[in-house]
Image (cartoon, rainbow, N blue to C red; front, side, top):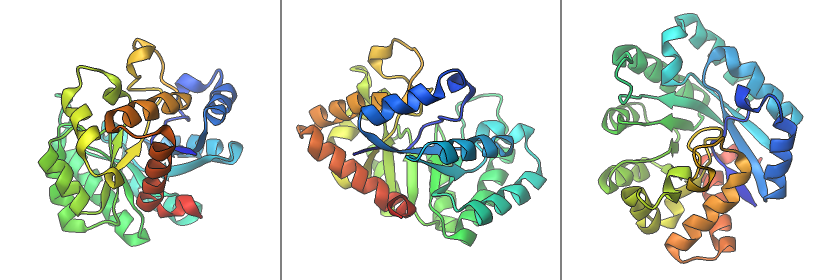
Length: 255
């Protein structure tokens, strides 16, 4: 069984054919799909997916892209959802310093408040880390959440090792499938296998063969084959290892 540790199946891009997208994923051997929310007004849509599709589980959080439209009251609402709905993680949370018109101070406030919630509920976190790995590591060392996943990891080997020391797994997906992504492919090939989980980030980060088209969780099978090739492993070995790692990162997946 494959586990897609990061898939926005609740996104509007799937409104027209979500049932078919989920069925295709199941047919491709994807037995679990983790749906991280991105804003409080989307929590219910993620829950609808979990209720409708037996292989889906949710994480609840506020993405750094959405902090500008969020209020402090949203943290109160999120806390209630974490208490009532028993998600697998707090997420997608973190920082993004790549987008130049972002508000780093506001992002950090929401990130810290959500790390506090993760500690309160003893939940792992699913992290957005683009161009912000070192400040994220700083806060992880400060608040010491229960591990989780650094989604779409694109840092250095030294930064990868720091996440691993803190009990995190690293997510690899579509970016790994491009021959020009030399650093990501080198990391995927050389990091300890027990540190790696697979993801699609669908509908985003499409693999090379989609020519920038809409990504979908069924693509995880071919993404897994790429990782298997990079590591010179069989698909079965790759699937078993990465799925086991996902269960370690998100323990309630095994519940």
